[in-house]
Length: 309
Image 1: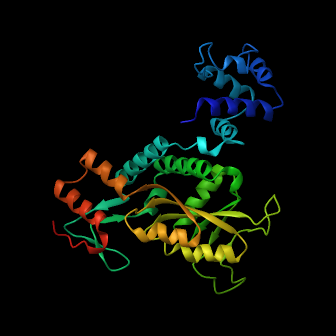
Image 2 (image 1 turned 90 degrees about the vertical axis):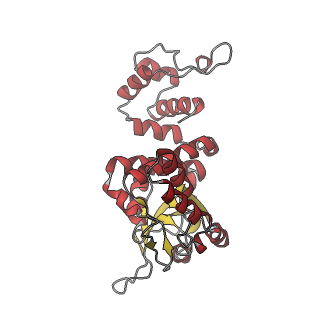
Image 3 (image 1 turned 180 degrees about the horizontal axis):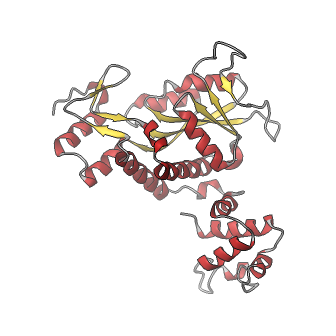
């Protein structure tokens, strides 16, 4: 889902990183030296011309680069706003919803409602921890996560990823690996022995620009956002700048969620919400009409849902 401009930027950056000009890289790959010239990137009538898959394959071969390496070249020094469009976000939300349903990480049951942590009854339940056991699906979601963080925040504005104990820890590790960024994790409270640390890993006092490090908090999901405060406060007290948090799943049904984020001065990023799940469940007829109707009623008024239709 990269643009014409981004693909060509990736080739330019790949050439530069290997000590070539664009024409030099083309020649090294056995192509016409003018293949990658800027004058060749558009047709005479202004239509964009794309490098062929064969050309890309030859270029990757002679530079010993992988597709992941090429993606890094595309994202290097990129215009972040161009990386995530509304269509991209919609696509990501839909695929994420399908994966959550297929892996049974989300469940609907209006006849025997679930009891959530607050003690309230709910016809829906989500367990994002299940996803770590599905490598193919997990890989797709982590690639989405990396794309959103780069597109919405910017690779150069992320110094460290911090996983919240415990569900956020594996996801912060997966994403940090893709972004090639350091990772730390934050406890809910300091451990009661040794260094009495609440933050594990290395949180430097300053980043490469001699400023406080920019840390993104990673968790599995968010209901109303209240639990994030413990982690955010701990990171800020340790000297980090925390302006963004990322979750796989945002309930998207509690007004207090975004209000709490705003109070803490944090922007929330997520792959999908309950509304995305419901839309896909309806389309695929994953549940009977009565269940879907009851779930929709709950999503519209979760605090007063009683299970009756």
